[in-house]
Length: 142
Image (cartoon, rainbow, N blue to C red):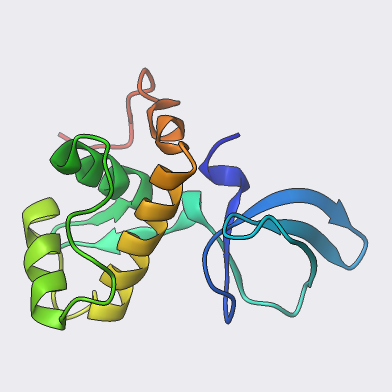
């Protein structure tokens, strides 16, 4: 499994694993309590592999942000808590991604990234970040 199978569902806490597709949507399993639920097409769903964080130069894929947090924390839980103050969250994120766009990345976004990272770490899923280690992006212009 990779980040392509992990979902964020608007209005629902945590992350979900994509289990199966149905005619009217799909079945997802919560990483928090392992409960399965049917998700309709009307729900706002984001695939983790499609999410990126704005920086002053470009958009950085969430996978890369998770890798930077993993490096900073040596694979352990994030040293900042999602419920910490806005200033503390922003300071932490500045250490992880120094050129993130402060005007477009809100404290609530940082809170989600930290929560998601901690959830992946607690479920021993951080190794999924290294799946594409050999693939080098050819999109970059010199």
